Every structure is written in structure tokens, then in C-alpha cells.
Image (cartoon, rainbow, N blue to C red):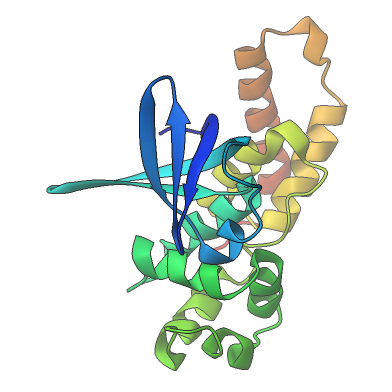
Length: 199
């Protein structure tokens, strides 16, 4: 998967942007709420991405931050929520407000999002509670936290375990790939001992 694309913003539409990179212009589906916050066209920007592959179509989705993309990816795990609906949800509510509503079981806030019905909102609450807490201060290890969440661990506990473990490792003494493997291994050990895995 592409992690991000950096290029010149050439066009802003309601829920799509165009990004010029090395002679190619990419059309990227983008949350409309975040389109509004982008700089003027002609500006060089970085866009975090997700490539959705179907038999008859490739669609590139873009996000203004890793946190926004993470919320999108978590939404895809909810039964009956596909990429287009996930994008529509993030177009209708700020990612922090969305995460807060999920953590607080705030059904009324979720159902106020255009296009999000009560039944789907209930599925979101059931599936994502405990999985959308911020990864702030995790820094470069955010992807490791996400991998641990995908293994079934609680996001907050995973973030804390990674921070504690990273603080006890000497990053300068290990090659980057080996440091990452050791960080994951020790974080899993710490989390397994604390019994924080979701069943």
C-alpha cells in the first residue's frame, strides 16, 4: 500500500482532489471536511493514502493525517461499511469528534452524520469502541500500535506498551528493521501479560 503521496495540489472538488507528481496527475477521493482545510491550489502537500482494489476499479483515497486514515481503516472493519460510506462519515464529522462519540457510546452524534443510519451507527459503536483512541505521542511507532490493535489488543494499552518498550530500547544500537521487530515482540509480551487482548 502507498503510505503517502507528496506533490502539487492542482484541483479541489467537493470530495476529490488532484495531485500532480512527476508528470502524472492523481485523482484522489478525499473527505470533504478535510478538502476545506487544504491550502490553495499550486501548493505542495503530503497526502496519506489508501488504495482500494476491486475487480473492475482502482480507487485511491486520501487523508490529511494518519489519524484520519486510521479512522477510515477501522471503519472498513465494520459490517456493511465500505470505503465510500467510510469516506462519507469522515466528511460529515471531525475525526476527533467521531472517536469521542464512539468512546462515549454517543449514538445521537453518530446518527446526525448525513447518510449514517441508526443500525449502522450501532454497529460502529459495537465494533470500534476502544479502538479509536488517539495515538498522539506514539510518534513514529503509530503503525506498530495499529498492528497490535489489529491483533486484538486495546488501542490505549497498546500505545502505552509501545511507548514504554521503545523507551527501554537503544534505537541507535540496532538496524531499523531489527529495532521494529524487537519493539513489536516486547510490546506483545507486555500486553499478553496484562490481559488486554479483546476476544
